Length: 75
Image (cartoon, rainbow, N blue to C red):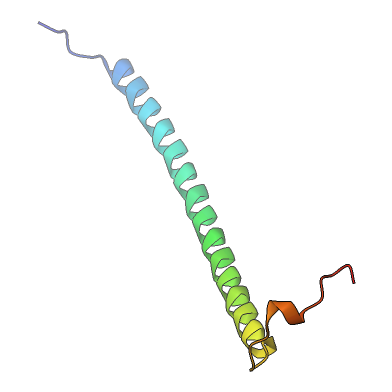
């Protein structure tokens, strides 16, 4: 038969569990903050991509041009 744990052993185990829970809670808070920051960055990037797409659509000429009509950059 296993001897029953003493109060000191139970308290030590409980203390270790509370410490682990505290670390896990801190890690969860840090990860939550990181995800929120990344979501903000993603939203900002999506706005910028949309703006660039609109800008590109506005800048494109209505008539299609041939690549033969364009001069290379070194001319």
